[in-house]
Amino acid sequence: IRNLDEYNQGKIYEQSIPAMLTSIILESNPGEVIVDMCAAPGGKTTHIAQLTSNNAKIYAFDNSISKLNKLKENIERLGVKNVNVVFADSRYLHIDYPYLKADKVLLDPPCSALGVRPKLFERKSVKDILACAKYQMQFFKSATEILKKGGVLVYSTCTITPDENELIVKYALENYPLELDTQILYLGSRGLEIMPNYNLLQRFYPDEHDTPGFFIAKFVKV
Image (tube, rainbow, N blue to C red; front, side, top):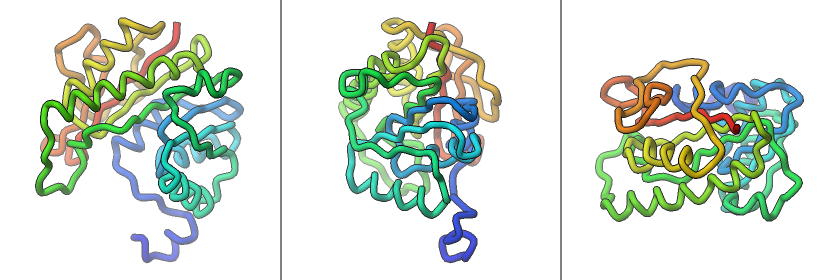
């Protein structure tokens, strides 16, 4: 695909169905302030720009310079005009950018990536999974602080572990002014029955849906 003229002309960005669905579930609109907390390499960021016809104010944060450079390359190739790329640790946006108030926030944090395919072998321990989950929890204070009341937060991962998915959602609901909301489109399975309202969550499995393993939750700030 990347050798096609259409790719170099910015007409193509290869992305999985769950990843595309994540941006759609955010339900972004022209004129809104939208924050992508862990944006690089930019698949979801640029998709949101497309969905808002380049007419939203999008802030794309990441704490990796090399990844941000890749994000900038994709933005330029795709002709995106409404994204502000910022080097920052998104766990502290509420401190570093106290006046930032978003209508929509996308949180797709680093994870164990056990849903990514193709993958012949992966060495991950329980300790690794728990470390990822602990790190993911640290983004929610910032996410809820910068989100306007009534605003939408979408949380997603490319992994299948409950510790990084349902249990993170449970943690967020117990510690922050958030409620789960119905997603605009369900193409996968519902969440695991280990928490209330699990049916509002969405999971994808490689063996069942022929996609990467993936998880999506939608919150509203109350």
